[in-house]
Length: 208
Image (cartoon, rainbow, N blue to C red; front, top):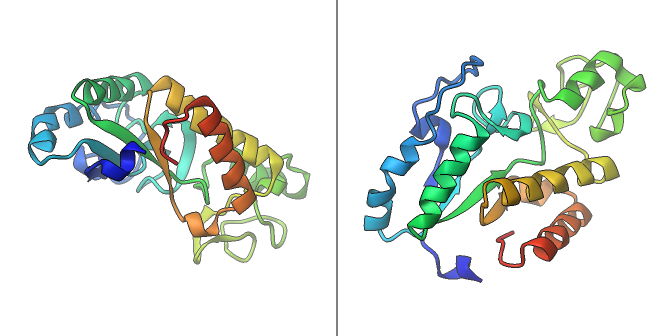
């Protein structure tokens, strides 16, 4: 496996690119700043980059709004794909942070769950405790006691299928080289096995 012989350079994109902490909804192509740093990264001897969260989120990247879009504060999906292409041309592989243990409160299925409660089609995507649902750990499981990061239910088949599509989408769209799972010790182990098998079947050389 190529990763075992690689030297990784970690980048926290929102900070590295000087994005505002709060997602202001303004689209700015900041992610291409990474291209300017390629000579420096190569000079250090690194040949792989691990990007902390790059997906649309509320603030710090770990409260995801949309796994299928690059955060507007960083640019567009096409902007990110160009960065990946530039890195690959220089022999640098790309690994993304997969934050699939939890989401942000503006993740569309969670917003539906908040609005419709027990009648929501996404109710079982989460871990309800009581209704009506409000932004409160007493109403649903979350990361620690952070109400703005509700836990996703990886044991749910719809959630597993959704995440699997996300994993494969970025491997295909941006030609990334692998995934790192955030809070991996809390993920549903059966789900992780399914995701790994799906990715490896389509992309045998991908890091999981």
